[in-house]
Length: 79
Image (cartoon, rainbow, N blue to C red):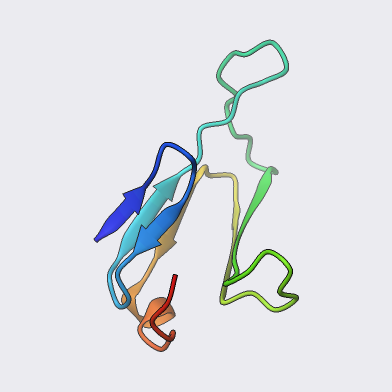
């Protein structure tokens, strides 16, 4: 199960599939259309201070991250 709180906290059940869409606004508050050469990076860490991510995904030209069960099934339970 995937839950994203209004504060941006992401909860994902270990071993589940998830798709996270990123809505981006421009400097004037309008919707930004992701371009072919734009790169987005999603980094998941247990703690902000950690240097090594639990998961790191990089996508180019799209505004969503697809997480497969294999990417989370080996993670320890936690918050």
